[in-house]
Image 1 (cartoon, rainbow, N blue to C red):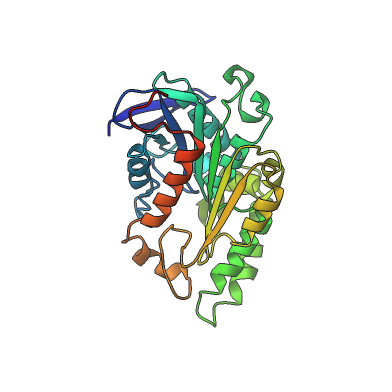
Image 2: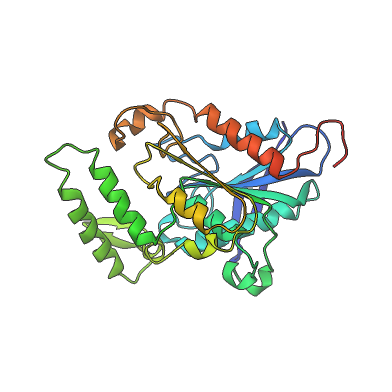
Length: 319
């Protein structure tokens, strides 16, 4: 399972450093672009304090089944740029640049590229997979139209206005807090979002803490439903029954809106961290969950689905 260090060139010239994991044997190979959740995440979906560690096991599972994987560091994380000053749309443009870089490689089949997105990454995956493919929506005209996406996997992706998704998230998180604190969180969330909406800078201080204000403002007004209605390639959408950050009910909206073949799964006990955790979901269980690996059954489900949709050849046959 060879791993190659590579970089995608963003629209502003910044280099997005990443790792391309290749299957054994000669190419060109089908491939996927892996897009992580929100935050200052490296290519493996880790921060200094929290190790999601999604990239390595998923890339290894895919490589074992003949599929390459590109994952990359967010700007400002182990690379130039300032993470807090990066907008939601900039992150989307960076994803499009990574997709172009992957499709341009001679060892990758440009006609067999999928996208896997988790949480925020799922929202960007929806946009990358939507048709028509236009350069205007994804960067400067010089960057050119993005390559076509052959299949998309949405892990914990929402299907409503961004502001509604954040408010719903606050309500679900409040349900796992101690009873005396529970009623306070929605009101605090309302005040927080109002303060952010009134800002105009990339970074702003709220209660003395610097926050990525532009990213939040752009997310609040983003509605992925228009993209879902323009996805004509196969879709696999999975959300855990114990996800307290994304409403599993949004799976039904994804299925309703997507004109292509959408397959949805609500997995019991699966959380937003893509681990199994039975019982009442709560943020307080996150540190314990992160000591466990990503759910192996989920990795198998994703791999098996993509192997079919990206038409991975049986070993010993020509591509």
